[in-house]
Amino acid sequence: MDRQTTRVAVLLDTDRNGSTGISQGNGFGADFDLDLSAATGQGVIAKADPVSCAARQSCFTPVGSVSIAVDTDRMQVDVPLAMLSVADGRMCFQINSYVLFGVGSAVIFDFLPNSGGACLQ
Figure 1 (cartoon, one colour):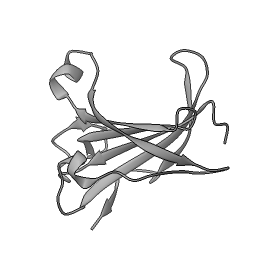
Figure 2 (cartoon, rainbow, N blue to C red):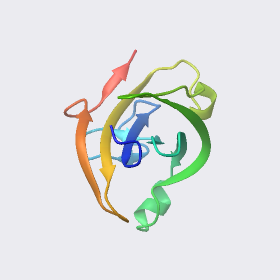
Figure 3 (cartoon, helix red, strand yellow):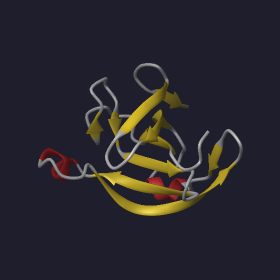
C-alpha cells in the first residue's frame, strides 16, 4: 500500500433502501460516503445529496471527519453511528479501493463485495 496514493471509498446504505440516496445501479442506494486517505490519515464522512447529484454537481456533502489508523497494509477507522443517522447499526455497504494518479485520475483496484452490497444485520 502506497500511503501517498492509496484511497478507499466506503458507500453506506444506512436505511437499507435502494431507492433512497445515490443509486449505484445495482439496487444499492448510498446514503453516506466515507472517503479514506492514507496520505492524510483522515476520513471524510459525506451525506448523499440527490438533488445536487441530479444537477451534475457533487453527489455527497461533507458532514464530518474521523482519524484513520494506517499500518503497513491496512487502514482502520471508527465512525460513531450518530454521524450516520443510524441507531441500530444495521446497514449495507460497498467498498472500493483505488489509487490516485494526478488530478482527477483514479484506478480502481478492488471492490467488496464483488457485486451489489453486503449488509450488516
